[in-house]
Length: 500
Image (cartoon, rainbow, N blue to C red; front, side, top):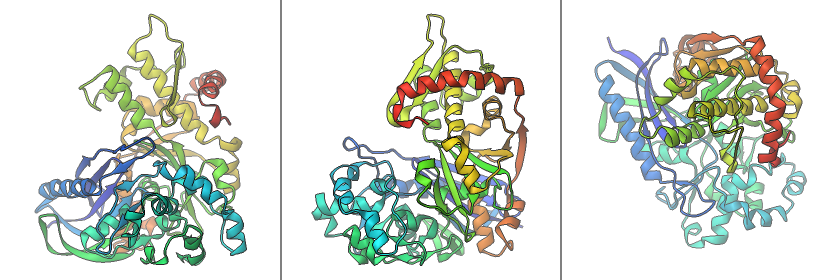
């Protein structure tokens, strides 16, 4: 008998991963990742070709199908999505633009200055709307749409849809291009209390109301059925579940649900993100902490996520410089040989996300191993700082007490890297059996949607599998904390705008 499985897609900022996840025990029966390039057409612009993303999705699925034909019966298709991206589409839902990434800064200049002069939060108060995050605004879809209106009217006048990657992929699948509510309010034109697009906010951004007309739904919503993807046909139609923001899927995939008190998820991928559930709702405060909320299917609970954004990218930079041609497998060897004993003299501030990187303590005897040790320590200090924002006030205000960190992602596969994390954090670090937390979390959502399990908690208990725990070494923790002030002083010289 074929194994019942979820076809889980993790649509990320640099690749699409497809996985066949056994709905009974969470085993990844097959997995394929297909990468695509980020495009930098000019300074400050960061884009993805939507056709390239779609081709990567089809390619990843074709390989998974090949490996599971006759082995698995897919009972549902579901997704994890990256957020805060924009595609303007025409009346036929065909893209008029590339996918503008969250970090794309084209709207952060004159358009943002124009917007600020409108006193947006005064406007929101006048119209009885929640305040707008001035951190998210220049990166959000709404202001980027206004940028097109101001700077590319030839494109804007043809636009009939203000899509993101979720709606683009769903439209290509031929199902309803709805918007799940973990992504909808990040467009900043939703009245989050009513869960509907706000005419007042669309007017504030000078966006025609009909650009946002799709339904806002929960992450378990079935938005249609498909009988094929690309050239591959299914024996019967399969329901498509819309899925959720990648931080929600990753947190589900570590089993760190609201009832699991004391646990925080750490997804170690291209970004190194800490995520936790809380019913904290003071939206005016979250930007100062660095933790941004994502709405979840648990009613009053949000997932709060924050972290160091360049872990995977920083490590890949190192490998390309010192070990070209060896690929990602080189990290297993390097971390296995590294001595994380708090005795190194090299300090490495990995501020790649701000183009502010620094090293000191270099001598004629410094080796590539000394540098990878310092880089790993610097990355881990940065993650430690993400838990110390506002002297830990964020966790206190959210009522979160942390007893352990559950990790997943590519970086979690190194025992020595995780032991270093436990030693610096001073907390137990538990690794998931699968490094693909988002794919596992997608299966949790889909299995709940399809009624295989009666709740997210029951689905997570069955599908999420946890592995080894790394306990902190008290002496090494003290040694790293003794070195921390010197690292922080150097860090504040390199990146003075992120002092805390």
